[in-house]
Image (cartoon, rainbow, N blue to C red; front, side, top):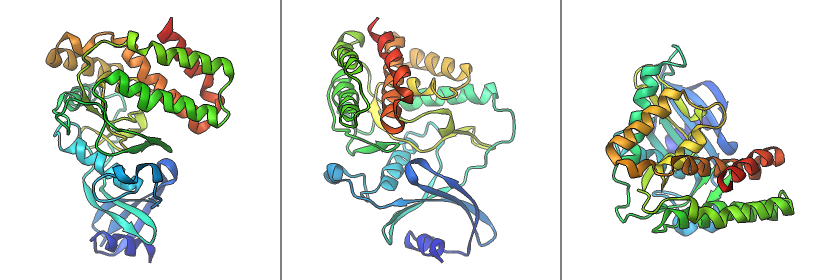
Length: 312
């Protein structure tokens, strides 16, 4: 049985029964599996495809997107701040990347439980304020990863402005143009925005570990651990960049963002929130550009409105 072989390949034994199947991010298969009639685990698989552009910057232990996810969860867990599912196994079998995760029990209570979301906002701030995995004060990461289906070059830069322009905004503009998704006027507007970013951001932004893909679907209200986060695309970046995605696609309760910003300001000082709205909007724009790239021109108008907001 395929699922048995996959579990055994990463050192997990038992008689598995698939209880539920779900579609995962970027073609991954996600299944909730019961072992020996007792405990539940999450089995996530995806093709073990090598990406030639990042072979020399693979995450610890392997080269697949599954390994990227495992590395991101491990980096978050090491901060002892926000809850994430535990990693029970990770490896490759028969051309498939395999990640076995702790099964989180999703709460059946009110979705807008203010206390839990306030606590989550505080914990997320603590994640951003924790000592980053690299103490060099640089932005980026020791390995590359993906945001959905988009490859992310995480080679470090000393300055956040340099990183976000060279590693995020400009590569997506080039990809949009190469895929013929970008009209000439839009290209000019985005180029102007990229040139303006140094004037929009404050100097000396404090680097912090961010989840990188924190829309509401990647935050789960659990029965016993508060709000837990899944499916990261981590990088050491500007903590306020994270909020850009948090405001998209349904968003988070207002109490959550207020708690996050309050904690950042209290612990990190006023500089943590300098030019707050521009930094958040830049995070929003980056994710809209990525959705434009992945899903087509349906996101073009929203992305151009965001760019116009930044340059107005």
